[in-house]
Amino acid sequence: MLLIRDATPEDAARLLEIYGPYVENTAISFECETPGLEEFQSRIRTISAHYPYLVLEEDGQIAGYAYAGVLKARAAYARSCEVTIYLDPRARKRGMGRMLYEALEQRLKAQGILNLYACIAWPIVPDETLSTNSADFHAHMGYTKVGEFHSCAYKFGRWYSMIWMEKFIGEHD
Image 1 (cartoon, rainbow, N blue to C red):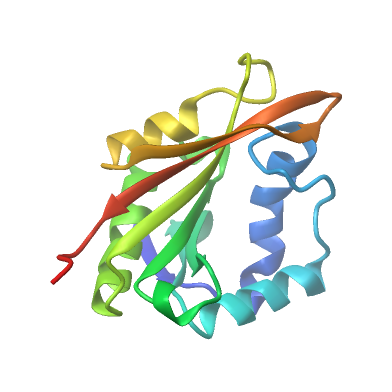
Image 2 (cartoon, one colour):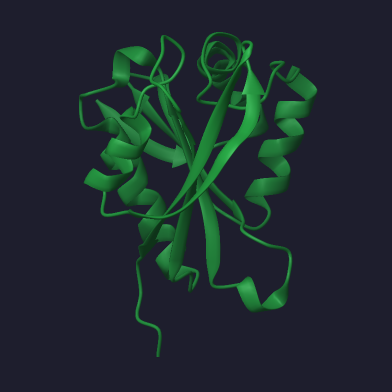
């Protein structure tokens, strides 16, 4: 059975089990060290105070999470936000990412958010730590590429680029 619910600080240990390998073994996250439990709990509290932070459970076990955050800390950006998703590897290619993002979009739309942005690590040359899967997923979800920062991140002894993808979920009246 699948269930999408709000994340709580008590979920942090399981979320770190999912997130840690992304930090340690991939360039998908540009963090170079996995945050500690207290730091991750603080992130959940801070984000949840203003934006949705969702987890997807499969048979009572968290299989992934998605959240939104501030795009820019200026009042004029209040109808835009950045979105992020991480899945347990066993949850990939099963429609769970779509379910999480659709639930996140519904919540954001209800908050009056119109523009969604995804900041995605982009390989200069695909390698064992980074492919185009995240960009492909976002494109499948209706996002379009709107920008690229070239060779802006250095991890695992090589350079990576970063792209921004955008999706509108409301009318700009």
